Length: 123
View 1 (cartoon, one colour):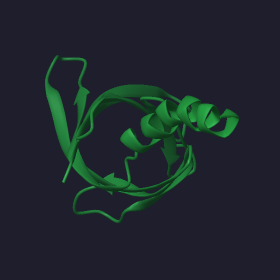
View 2 (tube, one colour):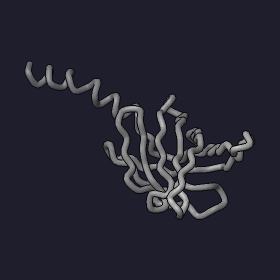
View 3 (cartoon, helix red, strand yellow):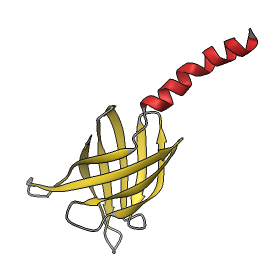
View 4 (cartoon, helix red, strand yellow):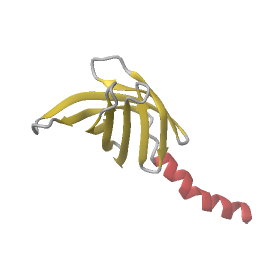
């Protein structure tokens, strides 16, 4: 009886983790708003591999070399990771099983930072 109760108590947590498995190919855009108000949109893609709360894989602008994901972690519906030695810091929220939205903080070599919106859809 205790074993059955333990299984029933752990089942929702297990299902929640399975529901948020982001492994696979995603694509979308990174939109950077210039000071003059114009939006510069860059197509991006990512290949995520999730193991528990750890996320690895590659990400980058379409048509350019994919960069290794560093410090990738998922906690509930929040995904964070970095690419290019921390130059790009990404924080997104899973909107559904097939869409995530958030922001990318981009640091230039002199330490200045700008923020761009990012939207990704599962392929």
